[in-house]
Length: 345
Image (cartoon, rainbow, N blue to C red):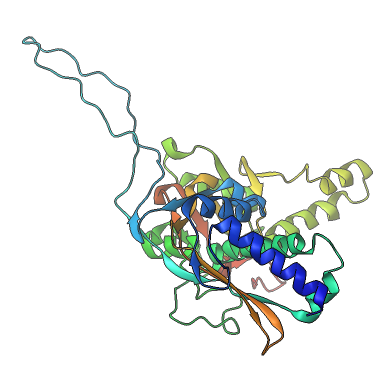
């Protein structure tokens, strides 16, 4: 590093040490829970989707849900018998399940070369720019694991699992594992769910409407439909093909006024969601937990590799609060194109 860059880097390290209340950030240290909360709040705020779901610091590595879910009802009457012995009885309003969550260690280790630091040091806020970039990537990784996480492997392999499938167990995998009946993998044809004219569902509206029926009536509160990009693109393409020559209708398509709801539910596209998947639930039914006090950090200047290395670890997990309030169509099963011979792909 150049002298100026070194001075800036040293000043940043001193400021970080003061912020975290440690003597030096070059030694591995635990982040205090109050600072930890602010740290992860900033990460969640880097992605709009994460601001909509539940997130909390939990005390234990393994435990039970910390958020309340819908119950069967709390209103009624106890009645009075002749002897006046009947008593009113309270009901558990929390609806907390006995299903456990389990946190797994996650490591977020990044580096920045001296050459890039020298190039960026001309910007007075280069550290904030860099931190914001890393923070956003952390947020995107949380979303990516939430949709694609299959297992928590002892040693992860990014080359073999580019969607971070082996880092942690995500929301969709939890449903596959704990409530497989809520995962639709086929219609009339084995292994296929056909969406389109002559298929299992004539269109996305029919598919979403059918999924809603799989959720108990008293739990259909705040439901949304999260739909894969490929399905949205195809449906939007149909509107273009039909109305592209009519200016007013074309504007509606471009302003997303035509397809902002499906099956009566507001629809959303979320980063990294499976391309052909359809999920119906409420945002607050999806949670991301981090074990309080589990965050460890250190920043090292590594002359051997001419770079600064930033190490961070935490214990985290993904959790579906109410398995009766979620249902989805498996993306890999969905077929949307039919050829002249009635073959679907």
